Length: 393
Image (cartoon, rainbow, N blue to C red):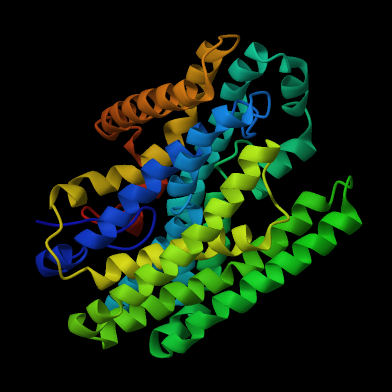
C-alpha cells in the first residue's frame, strides 16, 4: 500500500511510512470535508442566519462550533509538515523546491480562479447582484485581487497563502531541529490580532485594506509553519509511547478551547452576528487546528482504517470544488421558508455528496485530474519533474 502526501505538497511514502501516516491522511480528509460544513453553516451571504430568531440559530451554530475546529489552518500545518518531511528524505535546493511548488500550486490556482470568476455569475444573477459581479470582471484591479488575494471566492485564499509559506520553508525547517520554536505560534497570533485591529481601524474603506490584512496574515501565519516544523521534529525525535502520554494534556487543552468556542457560539446565537471582538473565541479558533494535529499525532500508533488513506487524496479536490454545488443548493433554497437547521442539513448533505462524486469523476479524466492535484500538469509543465509518476502534487 502507498499513500500520497497532503495535496499539494510532498512525495509518495513507502509502505511502512504509509501505515504510520494514516493518521495524517485522516486529518487531510477531515480538513477537506469540514470546509464544506463550515461554509454550509452560514447563510448565502456568509452570515449566521441573522434574519431568523435566536432559537433557530442554535443547531447551525453548535454544529459550526464543532466543524470549525478544523479550519484551513489545519491544511496549512499538514501541507508544511509534509513538505518538510519530503525535504528531509530527499533534500533539494531552495530554488528547486520553490519552482516545484509554484507549478503544483499556482497552475491549478489560475485555473480555478478563472473558473470561479465566471461561475460566480450564476449565484450573482439568482441573488440580484449580477451587474456588480459582471462589472468586477471588466476591472483589471479586481483580477489583480483575484490572483494576489485569492478573493475570487471565499475559499481560494488558501493557495496563495500556502505558497507564500512555502517561500519561508527554510525558516520552518529550523523548528524540526528545535521544536521549542513551535511555541512562537502564540506570539504570531497575538501580533496578528493587534495588527488587524490597528489596520481595520486606520485603513477602513481604503483600497489598500485587503492587501494590508493579507500581508499581516501571511507574515504571522509563519507561526503555523514553525508549528508544523516542531511537530515534525517531535515526530522524528520522540517515540510513540511518549507522544501518546501527552494525549490527556492535549485533550484537556482542546476541551478548554472548545468551551471558549461555546461562549462565542452563544454570543453568535444571541446577536445574529459573528463575535469578532471576543478574544476567547479568537484564540480558540486559531489554536484548535494545532490541537487537532497534536491529538492525531499522539494517537498515530493506533489502528486507523486504511480506507482513509485511499480517500485522503480527494480532500484537496473537495476543498476546491465544493462551492460549485453549495452555490447551486443555496440558489435552490432561495425564497423558501425552510428553517436554518434544514437549510444546513440539506446544504451539507448535497454539497458533500455531489462534490465527492464530482471530484471522483474528475480524478478519472486524465486531461483534468491535474486541476485537483491528482494527475500530471498539462503541456510542458506535465513533462517537468513534478509529473514523475507516483509523486503527489
